[in-house]
Image 1: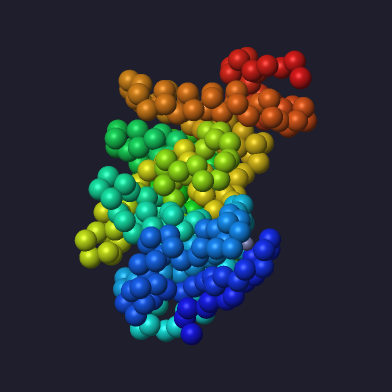
Image 2: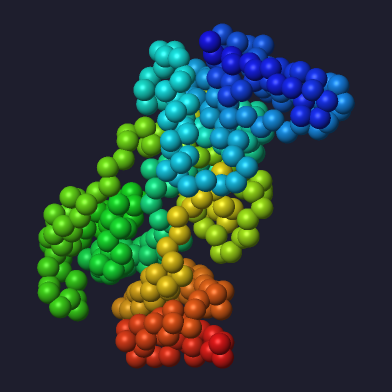
Length: 365
Ligand SMILES: [Zn+2]
């Protein structure tokens, strides 16, 4: 039985009403139920007896021909592990409808978001983040900054230098290897560099040789993830602040999408985009402020090195430096005195300069 309906007495007056508990709505076989979902009339909004307002948000599944929609209906953002368990349970309860096993699963925090995805109004694209990406810590903004620096080298036909921009971050944070967008650019620059050997290396070797060493060291550590996470997508809207979370230099790399006329998902035409909105419904995994600080120092160093080696001064470098400065100023006050001291020491060790002076930080605390 797909439509699970339960009778529930009103907690105030005892009047019974029927509600759908975790409905699985097959759009083709239950058009009426689907119509009620679209009209937000699945469950009563108030008690028929005493008028008590009811908020009966229930997780639900909408089974369409080309994809499955899952509404988590969680009042607070939950960790990705829990969200994956919930989605997996729902999917295993969904009757086999002959859908291909790799059909996309679109997960939203509430049913209104899923309705909005389905309505697919012109110019109303939604953000998608893959579940497997959400199992990794969010380094999106830092990866974009590294891309900007590496791209400047590539433009001047110096792919061997571009590779080592990524390598410097990877050497400190090996987890980056498992970020697919980081790995793709790492591999691409290594291929482009070929036999060329970058200047200034302590142990000179070609980028492909170095990447091979990284592969041998890191592949055995690759976290094993169920395959279905790669086609399960958290969906949310940029203008939607459903969960009232503070926005603080928030950056997640998303794909902007819209259902096409056949109701399929044209991922190949999605636009890559850094959004300032928190991915709703699922708690992002953030590196600590100290780790972020260390990564930003690596970025500052990479920008300085690129400025020395490349003619002119690409405008994008100013963007990277502004972001880095803004980060230091914002996060500095939130760090403990011990964290501040540690970061100052790392900065002076790498640059011989003073972090507090360079970024005009308040050093009184
Ligand atoms: Zn009542």
